[in-house]
Image 1 (cartoon, rainbow, N blue to C red):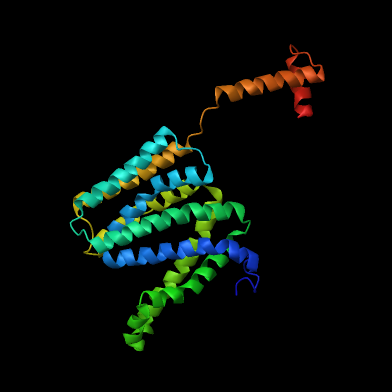
Image 2: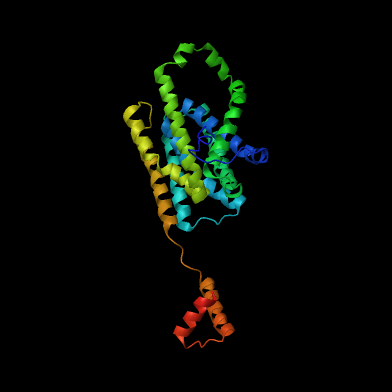
Length: 288
């Protein structure tokens, strides 16, 4: 509707593009599905820890499947710190639950696949940001009824009093959730276009600090003090990652040498006097 009224511009729905994007939408839906079931059986801290352990897996998958460069030493250390915090949390989790951790592993696999595969789609498909939001959410919505019956959730809805589904509190809560979901989708795709899959994953880890604080303040179902310390460690690792990737690498010696050789060749080809710096600089700039 926003596209029809001209408030925003998105790519049109094209069958060929749908076929290309469908696997990405499926992985996205599975990530939401496993995420929701994890939160049903575990506290928010457990979810955040497993979410925090994804950058290392994404970095490896990004290198193997998308031919990206291996992380630098400092970057790899920061990813290990994130993983170490996650492992420490699991070791101190008194509410360990096999069902919860089974969903957590399933979520870990799907979110890692989703991060790398959607980055591949964003890089190669050529849609604009609202186009990605449109395709991703529309195709995922079409998959929902299938999983609704597959998991037996339709029985819960059938047995629930319909009046409770239309209570103002429920409608407002779900409505606000949808607005935030739309915003997350838009800014998420915009960020995926601008940064690597690993950097995007780490961004999702670092912003969890506020979530942890809110979780401790308003819910009684959260981690122990030791578990929260390990949780903070994963976030510190995320900050270390940001610092390690913000430093521009020094130019390689062979690159500098090639530039010097190329400069001398330009001078020779143009018949410039190498000793006359002013003339050489002027004419080299013009030739380029």
